Image (cartoon, rainbow, N blue to C red; front, side, top):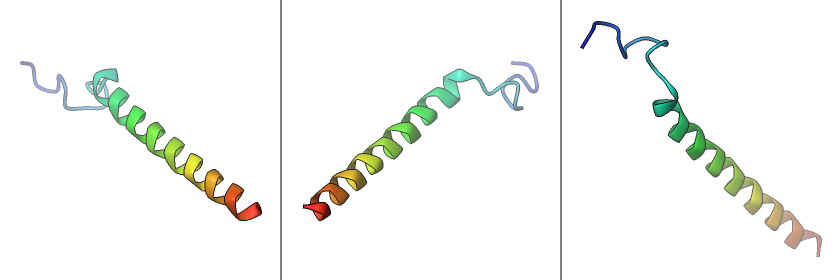
Length: 44
């Protein structure tokens, strides 16, 4: 293993950021859906 191979910004690739981005996107989508559902119930 070389020094700095995975330590710096150049070493953090899609393998590490992909799953994190998917989790954030899923959480935001779920919150948005629940918020819209709640406001739809309030309007009726």
